[in-house]
Length: 284
Ligand SMILES: C[S@@+](CC[C@H](N)C(=O)[O-])C[C@H]1O[C@@H](n2cnc3c(N)ncnc32)[C@H](O)[C@@H]1O
Image 1: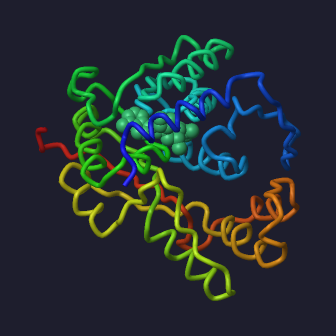
Image 2 (image 1 turned 90 degrees about the vertical axis):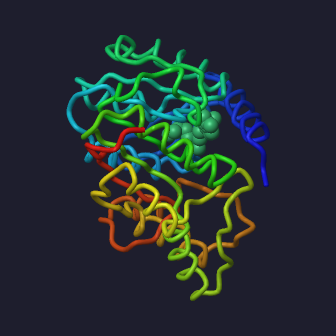
C-alpha cells in the first residue's frame, strides 16, 4: 500500500513538472486551438477533452453563487475554470502539496476578474478542523482527490471532515474514481479482447458498495452520474482495438474529437459524480 507521504511527494513532483512556461503543448480542440502547458489543464489529467467534460458536468450541477471549497485542488485549474464560468462564486482551494498551491496561486494572479474571488491554502483534507469552521461552505467539490488518499480509512476521515465544513443543506459534488464504473468499462474491454485497466499505484478507487452507505450518514444522495461513458467507450475501447497499444497516446486522434461530440450514454467510466446534499440534522 502506498503511504500518504509517497503520494504527496508524487504530487509535489508533478507540480514541479507543471511549472508555467516549462513546456507548451498545442492541442487542437473542436472549438478552437489552444495551448496547454504542463501548467495547464493537462496537469492532473492528461486527456484535455475529458477535463473539459469534467468541468462542464460540474458547472451543470453547481449553484450560480456561494462560497465553495475545492478540496485537493491541485494546480487550481478546476477551481479557476469554475470561477470563470460562474461569476458570483468565490472559492477556497486546499491541497496538501505546497508546490501545487504555489502553482495555483500564480495561476489565479494571472487571471483577470478572478483573483479577488479565489484563495489557495496548503492543508490536508483529512484534517480540516483547524482551518475551517463548522458549516463554513455552501458548496464543496472534490475532483479526483479522495481517490488519491492511501486507504478507505483515510477516505472516510476526509469525507467526514468535508461534511463538517459544509453547511446543512449545502451541496457536495464529489467527482471520484468508482470501482463499479471502471468495472463496467473493463467488462467492455474484456469482451473485445483488451486487458483491464487496473489503476495507477497512487489511486484507490472507491467501492460504491461501502461508499454509498457511508455517505448516507451525512448526505442525501441526490444522484450518481456517469458522465464520460460514451467518451471512454470510444477512446479507451474502440480506439484501442484500432491502433497498436505500443503507440504513444495521441489526443489529437479524430476519435477523441468524435467521442467528445456525442451525448453520454451508459454507466462506464473511471469516475462518477456523486451529487450529495448535506443532511439537516446530523452534528459532526
Ligand atoms: C488528481 S489531482 C486532482 C487535482 C484537482 N482536483 C484537479 O481537478 O486537477 C489530486 C490532488 O489531490 C491532492 N491530495 C491528495 N491527498 C490529499 C490530502 N490528504 N489533502 C489535500 N490534498 C490532497 C494531491 O496533492 C493532488 O493535487
